[in-house]
Amino acid sequence: MLRRRSVAAKQGGRIAGTPWELRKLLSDGAAAPLVSRPATEPLDVAIVLSEPGGQPPEQLLGALAGAVAVRFVTASGARAAADADVVLAAGWAAAPAVLRLPGVRARAVVATDEPAALGYLGWTEGVPVLGPPWLGGSLPAAADAVYEPMPVHRRDELVLVHGDDVLALLAAAELLERRPALSIAVSGTAAERDLPFPCLRIEPGAQALAHAFSSATVAFAPPVRGWRPAAVAMLACGQAVVASGGDGRAEQALGEAVAFARSPTAAADAAERLIDDLEMRADRARAGFGLVDGGWPRVATELVAQLRALG
Image (cartoon, rainbow, N blue to C red; front, top):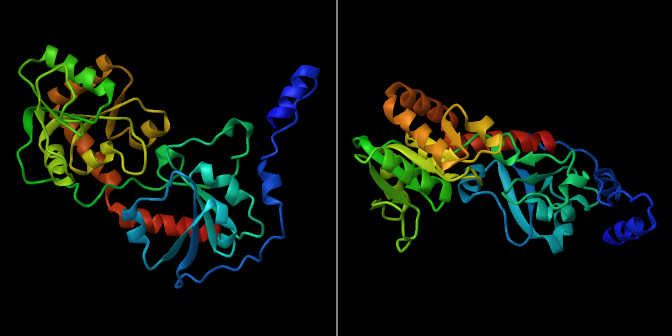
């Protein structure tokens, strides 16, 4: 493709379209007969892995047990997956191997943070995407079972920063300068990292994080990415959240529960509003509980429905 583009550019001619057009890839081979699997029988789902992996979270795979029989194959051995009810590409890197398989009943992509290479050329159009809304899918949000409100006092003066996100760290420094009486706790950050403010460091581990997410008044979260973003775990604990960035899809998915900010000053402003407004924090907490209600079993139920609709 690159050679054709180069030659066309030199000759001033028209550049040929991408050879990865979806209609061409899906036309290879004879179509398999569409035989719906009875709802009482587990679906046979093959997930094609590339390097690095990209498979769904173990929590989701565990919740799928009984309704879906999942097997993994590598991209180089993708033909072994062709007889499955549904063949899934674990991320866009594995999608070409899946799309080229002849005679497949149904196929889709399991969303990951990794974008589709050359996606702007249109080869991804029409491919179903399975994942949470901020990754391009339509599955509900879920947090691991350990993240739930704990019977601890929520400290009005405590603000939490999670992760090494620079925007969040700068926002915390700005907030502390405005309100010196606040205390800053930090989690998910290397212990040896120098920070621009005095802080209490939270010990690693999900239980300690759940305690911190249940104790702080406001928390700064890194951008919403992946299947298990920190912001969603915070929501499951009733935490008021200010998250960095927001690409539109994340804001649409979590906007009623999370405040998004694109600068340290804006993040500090959002945190101040939440600190000063108990009713706003309560509204955000209720919205967050509604988003994560049901956990991974709820996500699994919806995913099975989508897989059956495909296959």
